[in-house]
Image (cartoon, rainbow, N blue to C red):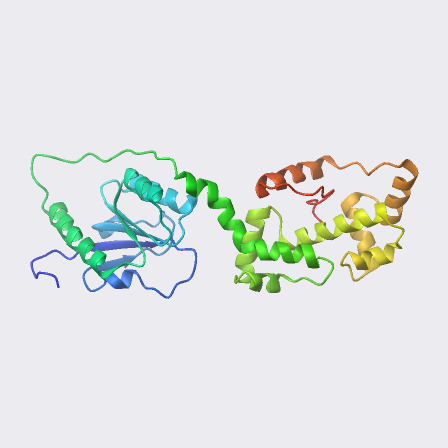
Length: 302
């Protein structure tokens, strides 16, 4: 319980979590504090006329973007203390938070004893802020901290992890019907979120990736088998051989029959277009893993 004479802390709350959660963390402070929830994660709407006593940044799995927001808030509002609340935590992350100007660092879920400790310290801070000692004024801290190495190194891996099941499924079933909704269900995402996450990690859209995988398979069959073109189309996941022929021509600049004839006569593989080779380099950089030679992999189908 709060003393009637104690100031009621005013918290400006930023929800920077990436996953939906049933836990109402701000609600755990509502009986002791006045909570103003930021309308979004953008700093554009940061209204300091609300005169918050504390800015609270809530994370579940802090990434580079979210941690950079903490730094940006400290630059924009250096006089307002910041509390970082996070589910995923490490000693390195805590050290980074304090060095970057965080006033406190709380690990979620929050134990009641820790919550009470925080509230006592917060009330003392409010009293000092509202009745500052005379004769001395604290200068804003200027900090430029590198993000923790664990965050920088794992940011890409964290984004890739939910998509690993999808990639395995594509590798094994690219010749079967594949739709974006079922792939989104595999990684417990909405189709819109899945589409954005896939393109962010792999640099191309899901449908374009599947099309390129099918083209790669057809390319290999044309070079290394005597199967009819129509059979290659079906074996590569295309329902219509005529569409396959048109798509193959757009992808490689030759029809499947012309491609096979040219390579049979010359005994050479079709040269890779410069644009395609750039795309291959870009993909291998994004994945940070060895990849198979996917000739024409990322060339868009218009």
